[in-house]
Length: 161
Image: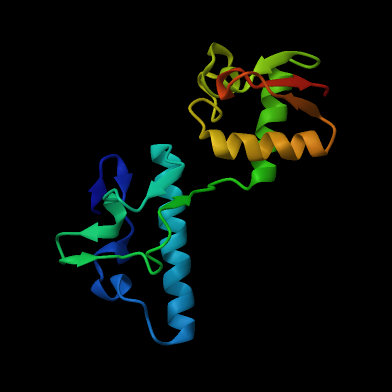
């Protein structure tokens, strides 16, 4: 099986028709599902949150079969990758808060994504956009309050779990 770093590529990666959008709807639906699963698995294992159009993304080129995938809509510059639903990220945050005894505590957004408490968790190094979506969902549910600082680095969160 072919590998990309420590990621094992699926068998279809070496099948040239998978780099060409299929005309038969049923085949195309299966093709898109396989691509979606591969991209999400790769991004999850490599901790990638955003794919930029300007960058070469390793899954979109297969030199062995001389194939390259392309973006269909050139106006899009980046693609946000959600390997967990926003609700699942929110659940992970609540679990993190409870595990670390942070109920009724205040933390900065940066502490959540890069502080010592988050080391070894999926939250560590998390993309800020994804984190803010999950925090806003929790705020909407009354689990926390987000407060603005003078800059993005000192935005805070008051948990009320």
